[in-house]
Length: 501
Image 1 (cartoon, rainbow, N blue to C red):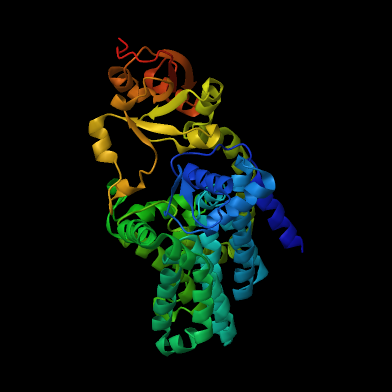
Image 2: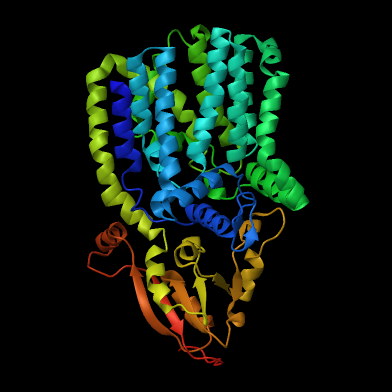
């Protein structure tokens, strides 16, 4: 009970503290939060929707979590971040219980603390994305399999299939395929591939199919080929074969992510691997399983074309357990590092995370825009990225303002990454002449806006970059200077076509 109480307090400090302060950020968090907000407003708990249209980016599980949180707590930052923090806590307890079952409680405690105080895990425990839910379902799938395999209790495999089904409801087919690949490689290493016959029972497959059918079946029935093409085609097949961000498609990407994500414990990763007894041929069944779990996740996503820093999160649990074994002989060092982390992360939240997230959110812009809105006002946004958080915080329809040439490059096209551009567009030539217009303009795009926007525009507000970025700019330039992020313009005249000089 003492260990559970300590882990609970640690999770409250690390994962829940600051959740009500962090703004909804762009581009990813705002998509999830805004989708759930629109679903709640429409009273539709089945079909994800954003900007008034159906949206097939991710399955339903995380949206259900957001909808439930919004119903209980209201639409807010805390509600948006509640379930990621909760699932992060569940992941910590799951790691403790699994490692303690494999070895001893001291290793279980160390593994749980290492996981909770790793930089990437701490970060994703606050992020409004699907990955913490997937982590838990992924882990339950593999842990229940391994415990059943080691103890000769095939009934535990039913839990694996149920958890995998929930994982598919969270992230898609990868939650079934990748744990299955890990199990396949592990059994091949064991020389026990015939065990697959016991694993894939009719009852287990029926549980999996029934779980998945809860959402996929009615979605296919209601939305048909459009749902299948966008969900399976764009957001699964295209993601694996065509890089969304080509600059990250390098062979060493996840080596760097793993090293950075496990900070400050990274320095012990290599010694922990070296401490494995007798090399690969002499590893015991538990060590083999943990290594296959971690290595398969990292290598698989390294081979995929599209790479995100979050993809290899499921590898952190087996790595944390292997690291914990390394620290049992260095317990005083472990305690010092853990205590330092518990002090450092709340400070990191207040003095680093909050300023950085403010710069990646349009919450401050929304506060300036809201007093300017009425039923005769059109809101547009001009910049490199479209700020979905501006829509989340204002509740207004915000058009992405582009030149006709840029619109042709960005407009949604089937089976390309532009199909994700589902926000409302407007070209400069389409700015309404019979309405007031409020424009949120990124500073880097201010001249483009003024060169192309007809009418006389009044500057009504400015948003400065956070203290960290301003400090870096001031150090670079060697003098005090204002570092602006965006400007708010308003056009009050109707019908005019003159351009602001």
